[in-house]
Image 1 (cartoon, helix red, strand yellow):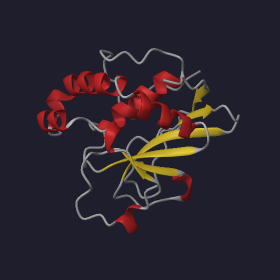
Image 2 (cartoon, helix red, strand yellow; image 1 turned 120 degrees about the horizontal axis):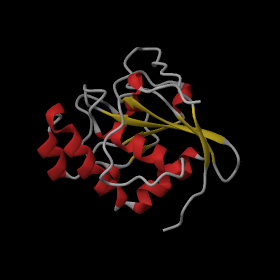
Image 3 (tube, one colour; image 1 turned 90 degrees about the vertical axis):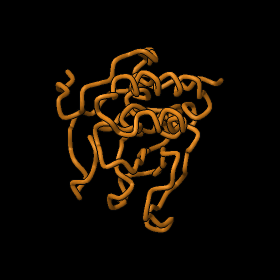
Length: 175
């Protein structure tokens, strides 16, 4: 696996998308190999696409119900980074299983070197928005994936057993 080096700072703005339908949009700001700043955010695929989304990447295994390809305006669909079918069915968006889901999914992400490298490289070249279909904006795979990538680009070890981050609304301002 090729490791991508990034210098990163976190922008803690807790801003919501204009539509109000954006999950903790706290972006990860990073400077990639080219020196150009990028960010990783999360957003419901059903929210209105915005120019600021940059590359729009669907990170769910299943296509969002009722969503046309035209309306989704995806740059890419990365099914391979989504939770396994077995894990998705086990969790079934039950908040009571959130910590265990997070632990298991982080373990799956850690074994998916190519997809992780592709996402961190994309963020180094501009804004990236990880899209998800779940109505639960705090307990879904995109939250876990964003936090994993954030830790990786900050130079922290994104350990598979690490407990989940608090929702972005509850995070303290950095600095």
